[in-house]
Image (cartoon, rainbow, N blue to C red; front, top):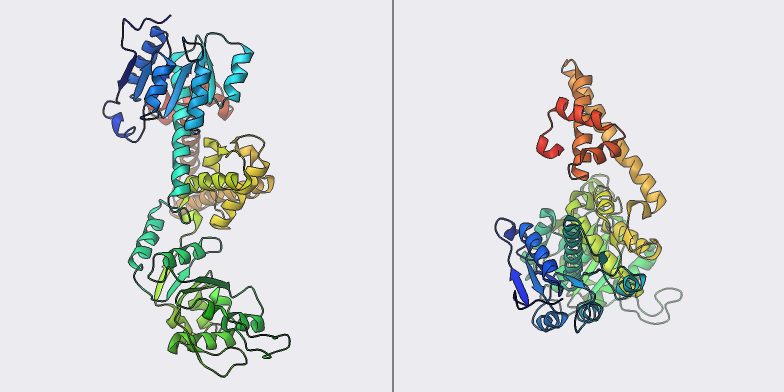
Length: 490
């Protein structure tokens, strides 16, 4: 029944402080229902939770509002006078496909549920519902919507280098400072950390951006072939050289030449490269005419070049020519806070490349990945996301959906890490002559487990006890013995 004569057809509110700061970047949740009492329940609940909202009595009113804005999440009844909730769902999904839509109805029939999910509904909420459960569902939908928004930003906002960690921000600042420079740059970092992406960014933001960017992996080809690739060759210079060929230095004229894995360059070619960097000239293989090179050189390596210089495997004078400005890229384990951002971007990219719906990780799976070392760095993470896009059985990826070898290898590494840390702490305490260390370490161990389990269950002791495999009385006693905060313990 529609009783809009008693209250306005649409109502809105903003989040009160202090929660307003958290929701300042969030659009309101829209609730559409012709039942005044349902709207009233949501208004009270969302106000209590400091979630901004708007309510509408008719789907038509929401459609009109959609012309000038969009919600963060839409909650809509199915059966209403005039335009139905399913028609509203269809229109919203057509205009804003990433907005989560929660449909609710007092008619919990299979046909409505199937139609809702086929229309792209985030969840189906049968009436009557528990208010707290409805709010939890809305919060999950908000999280999903914010994840989608971050993924869209990642896709559109210069996605070739992503990172919010302080170490990556320093890299970005360095790229900015070098934007008007043509100085030689040496990029160091582990394999897979994105050195070529940084080189491309340096080129794109430099005065040479309109000219070619040419890359070559100096460790990927034999010495004789590498020489011809770099400097080109004249016709007849060697067997099979049936025509003159321009090398990478000539191809990059006026632009940037990226020499990847420079630490593996053969010693003979190091000498030739030094000459180019010193006087700007080179000769094609088999040629006698000096060629001028107007090229900015950016080199990269995962190796310790200083150590290779000391071992006589890399020319010291070439090292100093390359090491004019050095940029060090952090490994992925040094910027774990960037893993969720990268995962969302790579999952979206893989889905776009394959023409499928993007998948996402559950909070537990994302937490698991964020704790891993990723020896292959960003490249390994990207490959993993592509595998998950193809192989994971559901849209929401759980920890158990990760590749078996990945779970096994990382479980061993994580186990070894904490056991090694425990052993180191025991050694330290024993070396200091401390006594009673068994009791102290046991209390720390138990307190950490219980606190984490309670945090996972939102303070619900029975659920936490079940997760830990202990009884309700035991967890209550341990909380008291260990002096855990009652607020945290629930």
